[in-house]
Amino acid sequence: MTRKFKMILLIGTMAAASLVSACGSSSATVPDSGSSSNKSEAAASVPPKPIDLVFYHPSADWDEERFMKEFGDPIKAKYPHITPKFIKTNGKADQVTELVTTGTQVDIMFMSIGQIYNYLLKPKMERDITALIQKHSFDLSRFETTSVDMLKQIGGGKLYGIPMYTLPATIYYNKDLFDKFGVPYPKDGMTWDETYELSRKLTRQDGGVQYYGTVISPSHLAMRNQTSLNMIDPKSGKATLTGDAWNRFLANISRFYTLPGYDWTNAEMQVGKQRDMFTKEKRAAMWMPVSTMHTATELQGMNWDLAAFPTLTEAPGIGPQAYPFYFFITATSKVPEEAFEVLSYMSGEAFHMEKSKQGLFLSLLKNDAVRKAFGQESEMYKGKNTKAMLPDRFAAPSYVSAYTSSAAAKIFSTLVNVTTGKQDANTALREAEESMNKTIEADLAK
Image (cartoon, rainbow, N blue to C red; front, side, top):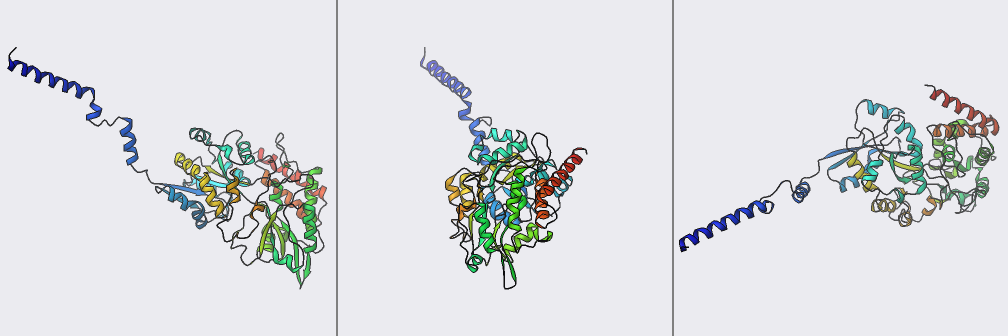
């Protein structure tokens, strides 16, 4: 073989090898848009699509400023591509239906357990998020057990929302009124009987002003009652407001309103008026709203503190039932994945710890550190007995029905009628039950 021929053969062999190498490893030399690594890099380099995320809450206690402070601003900081927006209630019962009819975007609704039927289920805004919970391995066991139980019961096995926080079960009290009349402050661990004795000492006229020992929100207490009484029977679907247990409930509350000096009218018995007696008029020494966490503005100028909610002799150590607030992704939302991601972030320990320290909400996470941190960074709660905001143990949940809120309103009416002397307790409860059942029957007949 000549030297020239050898050289030609060598060059040809190298060229062939080079060609084979190029064909066999094209991904190494030519970027392949179909490779998983390049796809993920490309996805990471593309910013998320900007979206609006619209929230709605059906209570006048919330406006856009409060929403942005508590939820909107943290969401925006965490997800710059998401613009949180808030729709303020207009006070109309059918507002959600109007929003649906007009095609208004609503992605997330948040509300108390007492509002779910009227504002979520009745206008058919619920969405089963079970698949999202499973897909993202979202752990519901992190939350206070009864709040999850209520959620499952309402959905009949489906999961429509995520627990977030609860409202306090506590006694707000005006220290100045206790000091004025030389009565010792309420203490943690009191029974209802001991609370009644304090109330009796504080109910008096002074300087032409009538002072009251205690005011209460009876309808909310009925829903959160400490012996887990049902207002609607889960089997029959009918109201169950009579019997010894409800008589005891009514007797326990009505005795506070029939002390000498209490001369109530129907208008004065309304919860808003009772609230004003404590926060504005400062004529009530103790206030048990069971459904409200007051703001610094509402309690401005008052020398106030907190005491643990009273317990029943027959149910020692048991507080009221939890009163959860849930967040729901709506049936009409076109961004359920993004909405769930936001709710997952809001359900995290870091978010709850921050809100707890700020005194903005009472977390439903089963986390002692988060609970104990409540109000640490809040001037409002400085020096206050914040551990009294929640009981050591919630009562077991009652059955929640589409008619629970209406039945609770009937319980309130019985209290008004008994207090104002229109009816005795047995008659008032019997007529309330009969009236509630007529409402249920008429509704089901539609």
